Structure formats: structure tokens, C-alpha cells
Amino acid sequence: MNDSEPDSTTDPAPFGLQPGHRLVLASASASRRAVLERAGLACAVVRPAVDEEALKESLRAEKIPPGEAAIALAEMKALRISERDPAALVIGGDQLLVCEGAWFDKPGDRAGAERSLRALNGRAHELFTALVMLRGGERIWQHLSVSRLAMRALSPAAIASYLDQAGEAIYACVGAYQVEGLGPRLFDAIEGDAFSIQGLPLMPLLGFLRQHGALRP
Image (tube, rainbow, N blue to C red):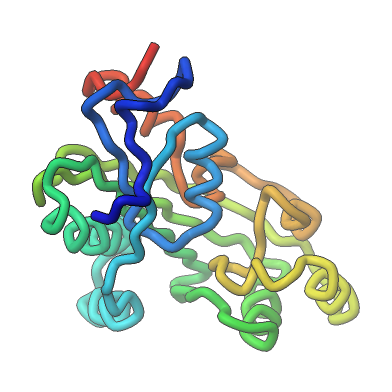
């Protein structure tokens, strides 16, 4: 790991990790990082060199259930980093959105975001959010949450207006929405933990870190 990573042993904050524990997020997700930082958990962020789409396609071809697939993807991301930094607590995360049996990917651009919203329009879908913790290349904890969201019927004009206002950040979000932004305006009902929908089930993670002796009181 490089010298720019946070050193938890010199962190003067009353909340955060206990001395001797270091957290690494194996993800490029700005949303996951923001959830951790708002909770006072400083972490290094390392994007794993994993062909996520190829792995997802392989799991889909093998007819792996979406919850199991999300766990597997999260672990594969964390494993690459944990092998290189065995002393760290490495978090891997993944989300799979499933609507009527179809798996959705991150849209990538405005055209992809519009396709996602048209496909989800007026339908309910499930969002599987997986979190895996590794240390020394071994899985020591995992969590899977399932959220259910019902998108209201949207006109083409409403979709276009939302895309104009939401900004390019949604292109990196499966489903092309953020519940911490304008996303709730798209839905009739949302059932699930807001942190999980953002990509990181915070309360279960804090519970594990506390039990593991890694979290300050």
C-alpha cells in the first residue's frame, strides 16, 4: 500500500477504528466511500483489477442466484486487494439489480441510463447489496441485504427531465438512480435500508467491526 493511505494509529477523532486496525475499500464507488466517511471510518480506497462484467456474465450463465452472485463478486474484488495487503480489513461490495428475471448493469452513459429507466418504468425490482470482509485473503464476514423498489409510471418527458437534473453521477449507479439524490422522486414505494440501497449496509458493518474489536466506542 502507498504512503498516502490513512494511518488509523494517529487518528485523533473520538470515533473511528481502534489503533492497529486499518480499513481498505476495494471499490471505486464514491457512494460507498461517502457512507464510510460520514460514519467516521477513514479508509484507503483501491480499485481492484477485476473484469467485473465478465465475472457477472459467467455467474449469470451458470444460473447462480443473484444474492449468491453479489456475494461472489464482492469477494472477488476484495480478494485481489487482501492478498496484497494481508494486515488490512478489506471490504468488497457489490450490487445486483434484478427486474422480472433480468440483471441490470451500470448504465455508463446517458443513453444507457435512459434504457435502464425505460425498462424499470412502472415495475418493481429487487436490489441485492452484498458486503464481504477479508483479512489475509480469508473471508471473515459477509452480509447480504435485499431492497424492493417500485418505480412509478414515468412519461418520456419525465425521464428526460430527471436525466437533465440528476447529473452524470447516476451513470455509475445500477438502475440509474441515487436515493441520496433525486432518485426517490422516481418511486411509488421503497422497502429497504437506505444505506444498503446506496451500496453499503452500514449498520451490520458497524456491528461486525464492534464485535471484532476494531471500532472505537
